[in-house]
View 1 (cartoon, rainbow, N blue to C red):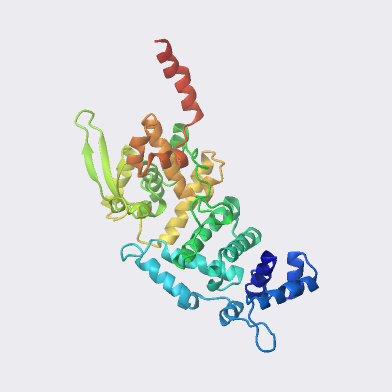
View 2: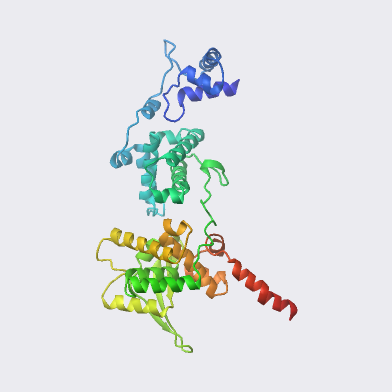
Length: 401
């Protein structure tokens, strides 16, 4: 009986997403599977025990806060950020890291506003209780799945990343107002990384890299931005933003025994700025890449690409060029085309792993992975041909020697 009373109270005072509050008794009766007459009796019991407030005319009182939730309208950027709850949360985002803002604060605010506008709710509704929050997020996931305005690239990639980002932002917002989900939570509010380990086999063989190298040289030239971005992206294993912000500066090292030249470059990874302030050394060993860098530096460019024009235009151009390269060498996995820049980090992981005979500790250091586990699970899955080679040659040889 208590559960039925509590559910009626919830539907009368909180309703479900985008429903009128208080929810009409006939709709409540349908939801809980009772007759309207029985539902009214339970409603009256809720009034009697003081769980529903009524005025002198026995009419239920709707709190002012709930009335605000009902007054939904599409919120523009300025209107959204001025809402008291959002404004306070933003202040926290701007000062959370020892007085400094978290890197993604702008994107987080945009994500929360998009969710609220898509679901036609006000941010206050996200912190009513966990059950309401979960229903809102589920509703958002459903709307994303069937929203025809989503671009094709998002459909190819799947909406899971979009939804995961929204879930993490909602959890962040709710946590500030003391509504939290424990570690290991399953279902829609799970904080588990989407696709973790799913793309650990994204790689290019030596033959594919050679074909890509020849294709780029022939079509765009060794002194093209895409040539440097492609090869520095692979050798540095840098994330997109880091790669595009790398300076055209290096320290030259010459091996006294072999005479081989290595360029040591500095890159800043914002995702790991809690480690050495995000500062990582990157090593460029290919002669042609070094030659391209030398030409670029002589032309007095500060970054490794021509940054004098629009960054958005240049980035978009290089994104298309990367897709063209992957298509030329015959890559068919959607990941190459939905994440062309980040694919270079995956390819780079295998590039160094193959050269180092799968020395994960060394590659984690060279490529900028804080843990070997992350490198193994998400980037550097050992390919079948390497395992077979080990079984057929080295291990078998050791067993009978």
